Image (tube, rainbow, N blue to C red; front, side):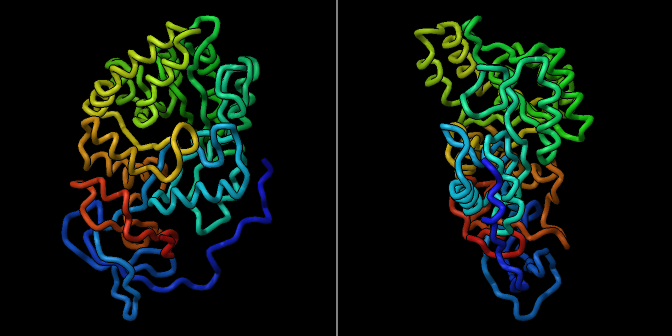
Length: 373
């Protein structure tokens, strides 16, 4: 889909009003304070006449670290649907989206001050006939490196590989490319200044990707203790997409008749996923929160992923950090609401570290210094 350059509209060029928000500011202690917003930035200097817009717990804008803006079940969507998706995410408090592959050209979103900040990975890069139709650039090994270079140059600092998928020949999950080709592709992306992540359900692809210095693993249900130790040592992140991996029994049932080995693998991975996730946390792997919105999930459901991770047994305070200030730092954005920071923030009525369900109902969302929800 061509970028609809005539479509973008800004939130308005007039100087935004001076705002005041009162409450504990996270990360930090529980002491209430006055936070002001002036010209799109945070200040704690008193501003006479500021408009009080919210009282409650204040945290940096949420981060959806696995999002597919511009994609639905059939592939790319048009600009109107991209806008609708982005507004759903924004109104739910997700003000920074890490795109993990989209067949739509969404770079025009950067021009919209009223839409979330977006880090694009471009199109997925997959093996021919080894991924969901209409989602990816599907290539053979000989074309993997040039395709990855193209995506690195057209994206916003990330490339998304499809690490494994069902092989019709093997009847089970299998690496999409030989390890040596993955290594060459990851090296090429790094040379372009891009980080690389990969879709990984199973086990067999992981050693090769970690050997190659991959930056992040998506889903990661096949990770072993040895893999986790390597990830900690290398600083490799994990976005577990718990709502997505809960669908593995459905995937198994859909493939059981033709691919019984695949069905058994998916059921085994599902049975082990809680242990794998808790082991990753205990080992100290950098975990972040991704809804998979636009893929198997719908947009605006980041709070659902937070709750799913907590229900799996992860500490709520750690998951909230991973959905906000920790993720922002990982992605190279200001992590907190310090003096002079961009005013991207969410206000909720209760401490989300103790009751993360409050993230379902933000009382105020401020993006680039303007109240948007």
